[in-house]
Image (cartoon, rainbow, N blue to C red; front, side):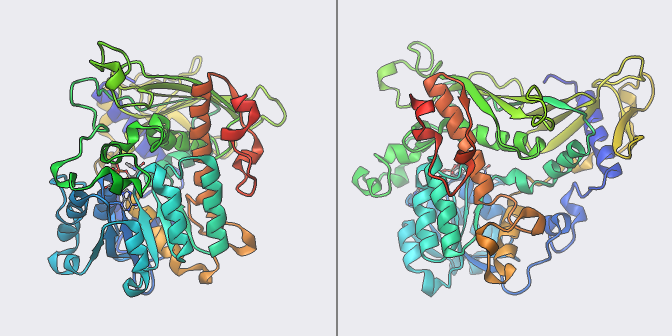
Length: 519
Ligand SMILES: NC(=O)c1ccc[n+]([C@@H]2O[C@H](COP(=O)([O-])OP(=O)(O)OC[C@H]3O[C@@H](n4cnc5c(N)ncnc54)[C@H](O)[C@@H]3O)[C@@H](O)[C@H]2O)c1
């Protein structure tokens, strides 16, 4: 959405003021104190006892972000494992990026030297007793999530697995069942569940501040069309060329090239929908009260890399097989859907590879206001202009006041507040807002130490309202079912109606084998 810097600043201040009037706060980590932002905000206590002894499996891009963000008061990294020598090294030395500083800088050389290193996840799991391992964090390619998580749970370890939960919907269900069976925690890394920014925004939405929501537009647009700019297309670096194709085949990859560029292949990844869209559909469904969608349709194509003369000199030899442009439309039930099936909210999602004019984010269009979540780090709010009312729109500063029915409502400052009004209120938080990674790891460790070792009372996950994981296996499974079904809708070029049993972990029914989907 093209906005001037002044309009963005007004939107941030409107949001900040609204949050202060509403019951939530704590936008910035600075206010959190020793226990950490997540503990202060989400209401769990600082970890009592020793930090949880954790092994990191997969120390590539994301594993290194998690290493940098991990909370040592809650989590003691005792081992790491990675197939690629360059990434084993990167886990310690970092790579010069402030988001991936490495264990030596994070923990100090002395502590880092005590961390054991393994060539693959099996070797790490075999050493679990000597390591005193309690849990693993899995940040490996999508195809390996289910097999590695299953091996870890069979070894009696708690699992925090990166998103998307698994390569297909049945694997997700089997992971949930395994966790219940082994009485170990299974958390999935959709970090927006632990983002204080998103939770604040969601509080405002649930309080009705933006009114009735009939449309959410989410997008993650990138421009990888310039030669050499596709960061998902990685040639094996020299340090990894010691690995043969035969070696990596044991772990589910056809070749070293596929291991290094796993996102580009349907056999190892889940395309733009799994990698990017799943985060944003997760966010949209949070704003809609975590309800399941009713239906999805969409178009996906290899419209750039697949076209001779555009992205590929030689179409036949371009290795990428995922769509490079996707556009999907989900129908969600509105709050009155049970009484009137016209109460629908549409969520559109697009991810393209040839234009990044707009920063990624989600726009929530309500009948009384508009909420814009920008790049996971900023939230902005504007009022809708009513007939004969004091104004609204992107230049308008707001008051949030108690409405006649007790809930908060948006009020304009004055008839036509210009950019100068943006001077009041503070939006300092926008600089140091946490994306939720640290809080997700803190809560995972806190949960391991609590609940008296019974993680599934009554055979089910402990509810979020009782302190349970905010992105447990069942919640993450729903995100995965949405992403996989959207991929099927694009593949088969049809509108797919979701079935309740696809969201039931105890049912084997999944969209991938449903005759209504595949014909
Ligand atoms: N939550 C987020 O915002 C976010 C962001 C980026 C990536 N991710 C997720 O993190 C995961 C990893 O992504 P990435 O970008 O780090 O990929 P990557 O390719 O950079 O790193 C993956 C690493 O896993 C290693 N690996 C594969 N199989 C292994 C095995 N059996 N044992 C040990 N190591 C193994 C690989 O050698 C590689 O170094 C993916 O699931 C991805 O979707 C999440």
